[in-house]
Amino acid sequence: MNWPKHGSNPQYIYKETGIPKPEKWIDFSANINPLGSPQILKEKWLDFYQKINDYPDPHTQVLKKLISNKTAVDPESILLGNGGAELIALLGRILAGGNVLLIEPAFSEYESACSANDCQIFYHQLDEPAWELNVEEITSKLSAIDAVFLCTPNNPTGIGYSNETIVKLLEECKKTDTLLILDEAFYDFLEDYTPISPLIKEYSNLVIIRSMTKMFAIPGLRLGYILANPRVIDKLSGYQPHWSVNALAMSAGELFLQDTYFVQNIVNYIRSEREKLFSFFLAEGFEFSPSQVNFYLLRDPLEKEQMPLFTFLLRRGIVPRHTFNFPGLEGKWLRFAIKSTEENNYLMEVFEEWRQLP
Ligand SMILES: Cc1ncc(COP(=O)(O)O)c(C=O)c1O
Image 1 (cartoon, helix red, strand yellow):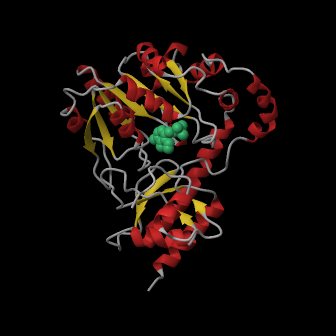
Image 2 (image 1 turned 180 degrees about the vertical axis):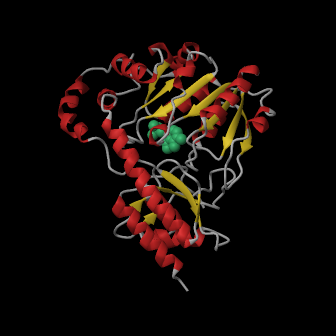
Image 3 (image 1 turned 30 degrees about the vertical axis):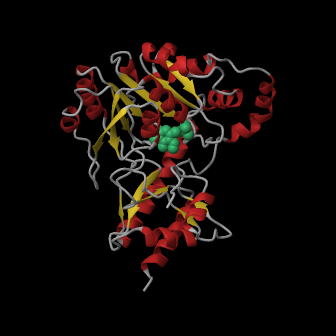
C-alpha cells in the first residue's frame, strides 16, 4: 500500500485503502488545535489583505522582536520560516553529507530532509510503551554524530521529556561537538512547561524548532521559527529563499504573540478532553501513550493487528493517522488528535460499537 507520509488530507487515505468515503468524516490525523485560530484573525484579515501589494519584510524584524521578548533569546538567534517544515529542510541543507542520529519514533521529515542531503542516518529507538529517553544509551552513539534530532513533546507519542534529561543530553552532545536539535512544535500544548530557550545563550550546540501552525490552527498559512546560536542562524538563512515568510503569515504571527489568554484556554480545553478520553480508554481496555499534549497513540491489545480497527473507523467516518512510516511502530498503533468535545464523544461512541462487535 502507498501510505500517505503525513496526516491531514483524508481523501488520500480513503483512496489508498479503497474504502468509500462516507458522506461525513472527521479528520483525527492532523494535530491541530480543534477550536480553530483566534477570532481576531478573522477580524483583522481585511487589514492584512492590504499588505499583499508590497514585498514582506525579508528580515521579519517586528516578529523577531516579539519572539525575542517572549523567549529571552536575542533577535540574531532567531530565524522565521514558512512553517517548521521549511526550517527542518534548511537544517538538512547545513548538515549535508554529515552523520545524524534520529531518536525514533519521530516526525518523518527529519529523515526526508537528511536523506535528501546525503547524510548518513543512524537511529536510536525508544521502546514502547513508555518511550523513555535513556541518555547513557544515546551518549554511547554520539562519537561521530554531527546532529541529533529529538522531538519533544514527541510526535507521535505526545510525551514531553524533562529539561533535566535534555540538559544532560545537551552536555554530552557538547563534548562531541554535536548539535542537539529539539523539535518543540507542540511545546505550547504542555501544561507544565519550563522554557529551555534561555539556554541558547549558554549552549552553542542547542537548536530549537517551533511551529505556530498547530496551536494557532494555521497549517494553511505556514509559520514557524528556529532558535539557535547566531552562527547556526547565519548558515541556515544563507539557504533560505528571500521573502520566505509571507506578509499574511507574518501579520498573523505578530497578532498571536501578543495574546496571552488564547493558549491557556486551549491547553485547559485539551487537558479536560484528554482526561475524559483516557478514562474511557482505560475502562474499555484500550492501550494508549501517556501523552501530555493534543494527540496520542492508541491500540486495541485484544487485536494482533490494528488494521481491522483502522478500517472499521474509516468506514464510520473517523480518520486516524496510520503509523506505518514511524520506525518502531510500523502500524502497531494508531494516532489520534484530540478534537472538539462533540467529535471526541463521537469517537468514544464508535469505539463502544467496536467493543460490542461479535
Ligand atoms: C513534530 C513536528 N515538527 C514540525 C512539523 C511541521 O510543522 P509546520 O506545519 O509548522 O510546517 C510538524 C507537522 O506535523 C510536526 O509534527
